[in-house]
Image (cartoon, rainbow, N blue to C red; front, side, top):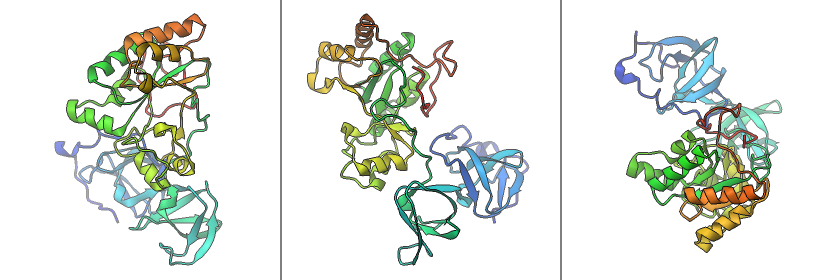
Length: 364
């Protein structure tokens, strides 16, 4: 059972993880694997609010950097240790055998169809989950289930843009921090909503060199940020599990992603499914990396038609305030509009920070 003793008040040093609380990549609920104390903060130094009985599924609203979950129970909101909870449900990524024990050496009880969401009660040290299905309780391999929700339903090439506006998207990594800041500032000031897909290695490099989070900077300017893997490999030779790993770690954690090179097969789709991500590719490729020309890139992007998703790259010539200005003007000459910067759910007022998770319908 979780410890029952509590300090009267948390010391200053215990106020660690609250500011670092994560609101992404969370299961909707967790289930307690023992009687568990709900505390006012994310460590045993905080006072107890109430004890949650073993086997209770509670809704999750955040996770602290030390692994404690922010949950609600019996009218209270507080924190529980991640060591005493398991995802309340898992979703199967393939047809999966429910076995009598936590390895393939145990007998099969029943086969669970792909895409089934089933209750989970425990997780073994080897990653297998104890679950229930069709009146039977047994174990399934953690390699074929996910705690992420189903990916959003959206067309692969146009993603969540369901409008007649053109979405300008940029992949990979900017050539400098100053160029990045100038582009997102110009876009915000001129009501242009970009979709940026940096790699995890890019994000890590800028954090290491400058102490900045490019994704956070972009969101603060009303721009959208999606996943583009950690190191930009062709994901097709990888297994579902390996592809999923490339979509986590230092990469952008959200609900849409773009496969490197636009290379997709069943294993890649499984990898995105395992991370709860919809795939968003493009409808118009400027091939800016090949042209290496600002005028050609602007001309190709400026020829987009309503609803297009235009592919460009942050290290090439379309990624500049002047290029954005020209592209927007060329589109406007034909009566075509670009996606707008984010102004909140009501679409009015000043440009505001975009959410980490994209809405099912982008407010372009």
